[in-house]
Image (cartoon, rainbow, N blue to C red):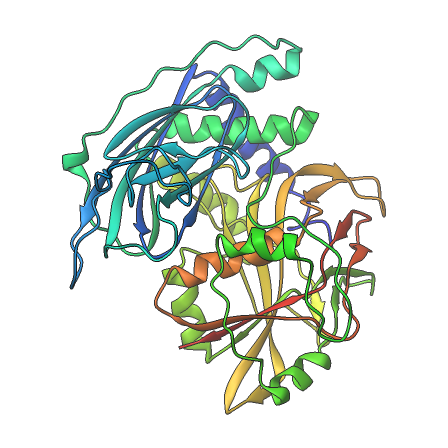
Length: 443
């Protein structure tokens, strides 16, 4: 179903519109983030969306490893360039960044400022050809400064943008944090500004946000592998098991409905991932991966959002609409989003406990999509949420966030015999996929 949550009631629309208008009044917008970036994988998707004209100030320090040589974000000196490094002329093992998925890597080291020429997504990585020669992780602080007039200028047709200026945080202030990002909302107008830009983008179609993850590609039913292009793209973020999926579990997955449906039996989003583990394990893993349970009551959520906004907290639990699998609504809904922009743009999914177990463990079927704005509901003509049609990106994003924790035993792709590859959700929005289901087995 294209509507990720029910159409906003009148008080809710007033509340979010007021937040957006307040944010546009602030000409300079800023947000701060903290991340623990593992050096054991080439790239880490931070989940931070970047606006054109933004200035990104990054500082980093080393987190001490439990054994071996600790990685330094400045890298290690080398006698010459190495062609097998992501950034050949930069020190090996140094912290590097990309401001969108296909951008050329840039050296960050201990401190760097990056200008964002076009809307994108922040990736942080390690300049290593494979397994790094050191251990540990980087404690990274990111300060994003955006020109708050960008959204309004886009709406008015003004393409001129004033370069933003920003401040840079000292690397000495960096502290080790748990895996994943910790979002700080120091500047509430800055956070509201991001929400305003997202709101205007969705309302007036000034841009098309992108989701992290791999591009989709075709696949062959019956367990055949997807084309190499998809494997290359996802290998940057997902570490997949080399073992074949258990035949009994494959048989169980084959019996799952391929798509969810709305209350009128209209088929919608595809079931694109499966989690294996008890409810406690699932909840602990999702919490560690910085996923937030969605509120269930719309009226209470409006009051909660207002209170948390007043307290300068990030409200990230916007309710979702009810979709059905196994003849019942979702057991749980989870989401990730920018503070205050959750009304228009968010990563999210629903999960249902399957009517079977595997090896004595519960199995959960999930449907994940990325809301990127608004579009017309083709059933009734009302405004609803638009999803990124490349739904594999959200599937892989869910896997990438989970594998950053210590809660995952294995990640495996499985292509069922009747995969969903091109379809429309319940509100008429089209989407496409390689048809594979991501199987996440928890520790």
